[in-house]
Every structure is written in structure tokens, then in C-alpha cells.
Amino acid sequence: MRTRLTVATGIAVVTAVLAATASGCGSGSGGSGKTIKVVYQKQLNSSNTVQPDFLAGQVKVFEKANPGTTVKLVPVTASENDYYTKIQLMMRSPVTAPDLVYEDTATINSDVASGYLKPLDGYLSTWKDWGQYAAASKAAMKYAEDGKTYGVPDNTDTRGIWYNKTLFEKAGIAVPWQPKTWADVLTAARAVKAKVPGVTPMNLYTGTAGGEQSSMQGFEMLLYGTAAGGSSLYDAAQKKWVVGSTGFKDALDFLHTVYSEGLGPKVQTALGVNIGAQVGTEMIPQGKLAIDIDGSWMPNNWIRTGPKPWPQWQTTMGEAAMPTQDGQGKGKVSMSGGWAWSIPAKAKNADLAWKFLQSLETETASAQWNNVNATIPVRQDVAADPKYLKALPTNAFFSGLVAATYYRPGVPAYTQVSSAIQKAMESVTTGQASVDKAASTFDNDVRSAVGADHTVQGAQ
Image (cartoon, rainbow, N blue to C red; front, side, top):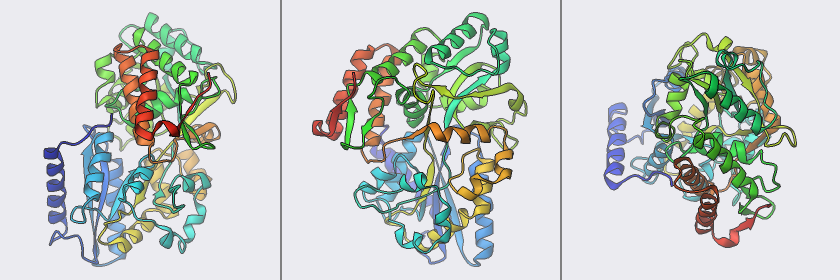
């Protein structure tokens, strides 16, 4: 289940936001025609300053171009799940609602359904730059019930496999490496375990503390590559959630194999809230992890301005596409998500927030952000820019995975289904439930969350 705030924690969050607003906005009201509050996530226990540094620079540009304006940046330090909960708490009240908020594209629909976000169609209709945005990215910003748009995406991403070429060579695995099936991935992990002691063969995110990284990198990268015909979460044609599919069990079985054979991190580590930061800034740079199913953004841990500068990454790390289960179909699979800027329904200064959002999303600013953040552009002009493609040696590879990518279901109930996935994963990882039992519990959790009449039996 997603982490929920206690009443005491909720009060503390509101108090902290009010304090931050008061210190940065003079009167603290945030209602001045010249002041806005901008909320974004600061990853828990991470020294990554890529986004704070980028935003600080953009604030200077904007305030200089708009004399008398004040943009107050309000970072929310939290794990992924807690960030979602905290910004929802902020947006409930006009007293604490920010004017601009950074939203995971997976949560936009649920936040719209809760009445937290403002439709942007009136602004977008006169913004010529909107024509540069990829159609799929635009579609992810729309709420199915009313067809309106509630965010402007600033990046997307893809996922694949990172592997340490030095460790592979020690394990006797030829590089470059491109597995053709799940079995190939497990064979490589087993070789590392047998021949390179002291190294974690493979990282596969799992459990509730990992939040969406568990659902996407850890599970959906498997599920959407399964051989069974029901290898999806949602049947868009029937508008129903898929339960009881063989593909779901196959994905859980892969997870079970990784952790039951000791191919993954120690269970306590894998289920910890800091696993993402540990993988990117400790395990990989220290040569303690051979295989990592992860995202295109990983280099922002290692670049000069990242939390763990590591120049050797460019020669040490290799990239491979995640194979489908048996090499069927396109032979590879990826998942895409990303983040977007939205204006809360209770924002005090929506017009100025929109003006700042436009400043953040010019071609120049967008190119700078995607370069420093190692993400994939959603603007077509930036994506085609040779400077972007050459900015990092991995940009072309991960951009190329877009052709094999899937997006999470863009419906409000996804967040509840994602929580059920994480719960099922955790029970299998710890050995508290068999694959069949965890899958059955998932099915029941989904039926309880969305209603049995909104589910459909998956392929067997």
C-alpha cells in the first residue's frame, strides 16, 4: 500500500510549507500578483542537486526579465510515495496550495479526479510552443473524463539494463552484451554470483518502500514483456483492469527467482527506502553491482554536477535493451513515464505561474534541462538537436528505446493498482507468500479498489 501520512506528520508538513512561504514571500500569503510558490521533490537522503540548481538558474532569468516578481522554490524532501501524499495535502487548502507543482505523470489523473489540479487548455490554446510537444506526451497529460489537459511535461524516459563491463569480463561474459530472453539475464547474474564474490549480481527494484520504481523498473518491465497475451495491466478497449493473467505470475516468478537464489541485493537493502540512491551513488560507482534494470536518467548520478561524480562511467558501464520473456515480439521492452508541471486548482496566482512555466519550457531551457538531467526530451525540436544527442554517450541508445516502450495506464485508479503491485512484490521477495498467493491477493486488492465489474480475466 502507498505510505500514508499520520495526522501529526500532516500538520508538520503544513507548518513547514507555511514557514517556507513566510520566509520567502514577505507577508507569507503568496497571494501577491508578483509572487508564486513552486513545489518540487528533493529526493530523501540524496545529495543530488541537479534540479535545484537548474530551477535556481531559471528563477534568476525569470525574475530579471520580470522586475518585481518573486519565485519561491519550495523543495519537499521525501521518498517518492510520501512526496505524492505531501503535495496532495498541500493542494487541499488554499492556504498551503503552491502555484506550480511538479507532478509524476502517473499521478496526474488521480490528482485531477480529486480536484487538485487546474485545466490548462485556456493557456495552451495561445502557446505556439505546444505544437512542438510529442503527441504521446500530450496524451499523457489529458484526463479521460473531460478531455482537458492538466500538465506540461518537461521530460520522458525509457528503461533498459545497465551492466558493468569490468565485472562481466571477470565473470567470463562477453561484451557488448545483449540478452535475448529473461533466461539470458538470469544466466549472466548466476555467472557473476559464481565467479565474482562480494558483488551483487543484479538489482531488481521491489516492495512498497520503492514506490513507483518498484512498479515500473521492477515489475512492469517484466509484465509488458511476457509471452502471455494478457501481458498488460489495463484493457483500454474494455476500460477494465486485467487480473488473473499468466503473464502477471510469470513476472512475479522472475522476481522470486532473483531473490530466492540470492541474485539480488540483500532483502533488507532491497526493501529499504534508500535503495535507489544506494544503487546510483554507491553500488554501481563502487563496482559492487553487475546488472541494474533501471532508467535512462542514471548518468545524472555520475556527471560532474551529480551527487557522485564518476568520470569512468562512460567506459565502465554498458547498456542493453530489456528482452521480452522468450524473445518474442519486438524482442525488447521498455517503459516510459516522466514528470510535468501543473497548476493546482487552489493556486493563488495561476497566471504568473503559467508565465513562469512558459519560461521553464522554452526550447533553450528544455534542452538545458534534458541535458543536465539525462532525460529524454518531449519537445521534438530538442529531441532532434545534434547537441542533445551528443551531450551524453547514452542519449541516442535510450532515445532509441522509445519505439519499444509502453506507458502506464492513464486512469486515476492506477495509483491503487500500483500499490497492489508493490505489495505483491514485497510478499514474494520476503518469502511470505508464494507466487500464486501473491497474484491472488493482487487480484482481490484490485477488485476491491476498482470494483469487480471493472476487471477482466487475463490470458492464461
